[in-house]
Length: 399
Image (cartoon, rainbow, N blue to C red):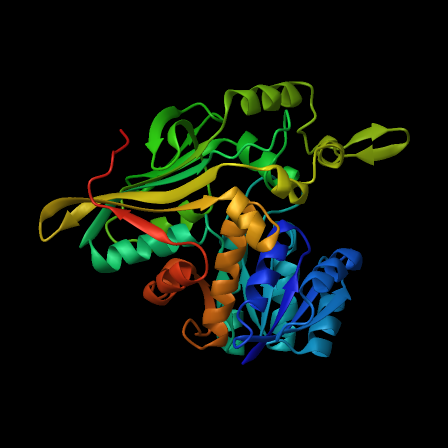
C-alpha cells in the first residue's frame, strides 16, 4: 500500500520499524535512515526476510539538502520523524520540498534553549495546506495518545471537559543507580525546566518539581507524582471544548531525584558551553555520553508503565468523570520488539499515525495535532497493535 522513511535509529525507531514490518499490507517498503548507518543496518538484519522490504541510508537530519536527496531517491509516502526534536523543522522543510507527508512524536525545541512549544511548527500550517500535505504533530504517547484520549472523551462522554490531568507513571526497574528511559539530554532538559499548567485561560508557572501529589495507579500502586510542563497542554488548551484546567504529572523515585539534584548542583545538567581542554563542551552532552544508553535498558528493565488521562466535566448538565489509560509491561515489550516500554509506548503510536495517513483516514492538508482528527480509528488501532486501553468511570480525582 505504501512506503515510509523512518528517520532515527534509537529505541523508538526500533519499535517503529518492528511495527511497520508487522503490518506489511500497509508498509510495503521502509527505509531506516540515521547519521549512524550501522545502527540502521543492525535493525534491517534483525527483520529482513519478511514481506516488508527494508532499505537503510546515512543522513544528517540537520541538513535539509541531504534529506531532500534521500527522500527524492526513496520516494516515500510519509516520513516518520523519530530523530531529535531539534531536527523537526529541517525534516518538515524537506517534506515540503519533496511533496511527502510528515509525522513526529515530539514538538520542535531549539538546540540552545530548553523551551518546547508548537509555535514554530504551527507556523508551517499554510505551507502544508498549499502543498496538499499532512503534517501530524506529536503522534507518540504523551504527546499523542493522551491527545487522542482527550478527543475520544470529548466525542463520546462529555458535552464539556473542564479539567484534564495527564498521569504518566513508570514503575520499571533497570537496576542502574541512575539512567534515563529516553534520550538523556531531552529527558533532563524537560525535568529541570519550570513546571507550568493551564488554568482559566492563563498559564501558571511553578518551580521545577515543586508540586507533588500521590496517586494510586492501577496495576502499579501508589506513586509520587510531580507537576511538569508538557507540550500537549498547549495544543489541548486550544482544541478541547470548555477546558478550564490541564495539568501533566509524572512519577519519579526519590533515588532518581537525589541523583538529578546532585548533577544539577554541580553543573552537569547545564546546556551552557564551558571551555574544557581547548574545546567548548556542553556539560549535558558529556553527561549523556557517560550515562547508560536508553536503548540498552530493554533487557534489564522489569515492571510496568501506566499512562492515561483523568477527565472532569459535564454531560447533559450533570457532572461526569472519566479515566482512560494504558498499562504496558517492560518485559513483554522487550520480548516482542527488543525495546523497553518507554520506547514501545512512543513507537507504536508513531506507526499508527503514519498508517492512518497512508490509508487516507487521517489525511488532510495542513499541520495538525492528533486531537484534531476523529479519535475512533486511532483508538481501535491502539487495541490492535499492542497498547490496549482501559476505562474507569469513577476514578480517584486529584485536588
